[in-house]
Structures are given as C-alpha cells and as structure tokens.
Image 1 (cartoon, rainbow, N blue to C red):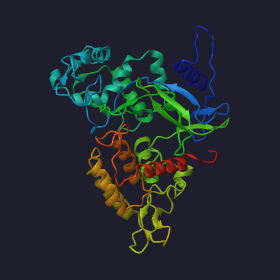
Image 2 (image 1 turned 135 degrees about the vertical axis):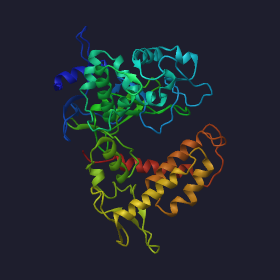
Image 3 (image 1 turned 45 degrees about the horizontal axis):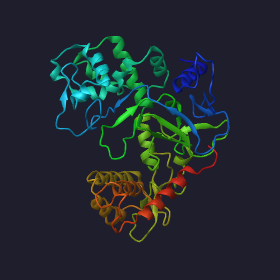
Image 4 (image 1 turned 30 degrees about the vertical axis):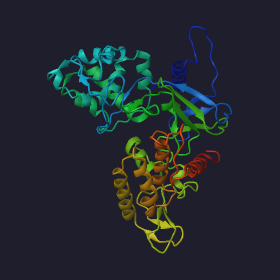
Length: 421
C-alpha cells in the first residue's frame, strides 16, 4: 500500500506537475488526502471557482469495454461498420484494414498475444473475448512505475471480476505473473474506469479508460465537478460550482439525470455500495422528481415517490392523495417501462417523438427520468437527422425544442445547485 506522499508524487508525475530534472513543482489546488466517505480522495487546498480546470488526466490504459452484449469492432480504429473485418493471423484480434493491421497500436497488442502459446488453432480463438480482455491485456505494456500506480488504485475482489482473463486461458498458455497482473487490471478497471464518450456523429465501439487521478475522486450524486474528453482521449475535469478550501472534490459514478432507484441500483451492481448521499435520501431529489410515477388512482393527478428512498423495499406514496403502493408493484411498473423503452428505434425521430408525446406520458409524469432521457435523445437526433439538422431550418414539429431545453436546464440547476457538501 502506497503512502499518501508516494501516491501524491505518482499523481503529479502522471499529470506532468513535477519533474525530477528541473526541480520545479507546478501548483494545483488539491491534494490526495483522507476522504469524508472513507479511504482516500482529493481535497481542495484553496478555494476553487466554478468553471475552473482542476486537472487534465490521460488514461494509463484504454480499450473496448468488457460487456458481453456490446458491439465489437476494429480493435485499432474502433470502427463498427465494415464489410472487410478480418482476424489477425498471429493474434486473432479483429481488424478492419491493412492500415490498422500495420499500425503501432496493433503491433504492440499483437506482440503480447502472439508470444503466448496457443491451445487451439489461432483462427478458432474467440475474437469477442479478446476484445473484451484487450484493455487489461494492455497493462503489460506499462512501465514498472505505471504498473505500481495502477496497482495502488482500489480494486474489486469479488469472483465476477477478471473472468475475461480466466476465459482466455482456454485458448492461450499465459504466464502466471502476466495472468495475475491482467486479472488485477480487470479488478481495477471495474472499480475505476470511465466510459469514453465517442465524438459526435461517429459510430464506434464503446471504450473505457483507466484515468488514475480521476479514479481517486469519490462519488456523490450531487457532484461538484464534471468531465469531458478531447479526440486524444484526454479527460478535462472542471468544477461546476465553487469548492471551498478543505472540501472534498467529488464526481458522479452514475447518470446524473437518473432517478434515485436507478442510480443506487447501478452503483450497487457495479461499485458494490448503496449510496446514502443527500440527494438519494431526498424523496423528491431536490424537487426534480426524476423517479416519480403517476398515481395509480385514476381520479388523482399526483405523483408517487418512495417513502424511505434509502430502503430498496420501501413502499411509495402519492404526494396528493397519500395512496400507498408496495415496492413489488413499483418494480413491476419500472420493469415494464424498461421493456417498452427497449422496443424503440432511437435513431427514428418520428417514432421517438410520437412515443414521447402520445404514449409514455400516459403512464409517467413529465419529470420522470425516461421522459428526460427521451428529450435528450430527441435533441441529439434533431441535430443529426435529415430535415432537422442544427445548421439548417428545423421543420415545425409538435415537440418544441425550446421547451425541451428549458426543462433540461431546470433539471440541471436543481441537481447541481446545492448547499455545502
């Protein structure tokens, strides 16, 4: 276990804030310190203004996400659509062109995999499994200092983490030390990795990156930072509101516009903790009502909200008529709504708009996270669909974009504007 001083030095080296050679240390307004929620975190050493850049992080390793149902594509350029995909004859990684095969990225990946002994003919190796494991495989390319930095980050230890490396052993003879390092990388990635957003308009494989400094940020559903990416996968972390000296700097591990049940369930399944922050404890979520459902009584126009939102089995109650609904009934409604969303073609503007205007709002209030999600998707698709592009004249539609913007801005303000955390 690294001391706080050792970890701080690694952080500064990683960010380029310190050089052994010129003995010049650039200032930053935070340190690695003891977190208010347990363990380590980043603590402000000076007052930080809203909009101020805290740091620019870059990934130690990055690559395809490890989900089994995610689309697979070229392991170099991440392209999803190609009629010319083929497997490398040396390592079995999926590629889309000779140019990608000849790239330095593939040469490095191929050099690692092709040195392992094979248990089956290379053409029979599962390229989807290789893609899922590729980010962890790339840990073998790191320097010893970088490997130590990676190993210092928090890692999940449950059996479900690292299975992609165990599964690789049915195809390859992997040295034990490399297997252990890659398995550790999987556990660290599952704990700390960030999904990397694709550039607008590009259909690419879903990527994740291990951003070690951002990984030190603890979670709060009322985050005081936000982050964005450039086309070189660098992550810029900015303050979204003033952060006073001595306060902890937080990020949000879940969707900011998700309702409390969705956020807490996601955090429990992926990060193995039940969030108990101020927002999660508030049934109204600071007045946003993102999880609200319409009252089951046909004579009431009120909204149902959880009575004790920190208890997954809590009953829900209507704000207007006080009707109580058991949690099992609520879960059934939420499951049905999720299935209904799964039937949508999110690239079809007409279908999305009709579903939003004439179907889903019969069952849920306009504040619900599903409505907000559909509004966001509509705004996104209006910018890219023929006849609705931002740079052209938008056709007159029942769905008013100005109203969508106003509602989303209101939700953003309610979520982010808070008293001192």
